[in-house]
Image (tube, rainbow, N blue to C red; front, side, top):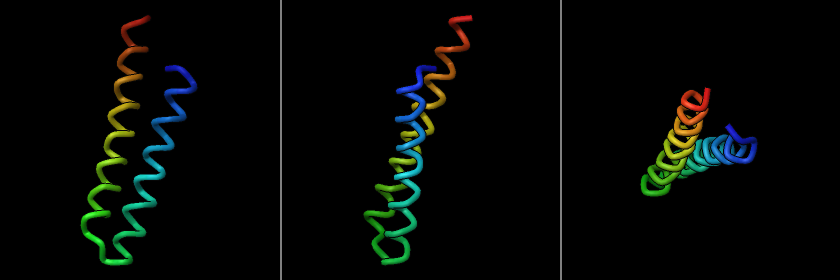
Length: 57
């Protein structure tokens, strides 16, 4: 897993969680869902990269 892609995946997860929690406190359901989606996209990106590394060995 390249360091750049790993950092990008972690950043998406962290930002997504922050957006989700902030929107939840404000009661904004739409933005909360967008934050959750961003977090899921980060997790998917991380799993994709780990899968690529697995098959490189």
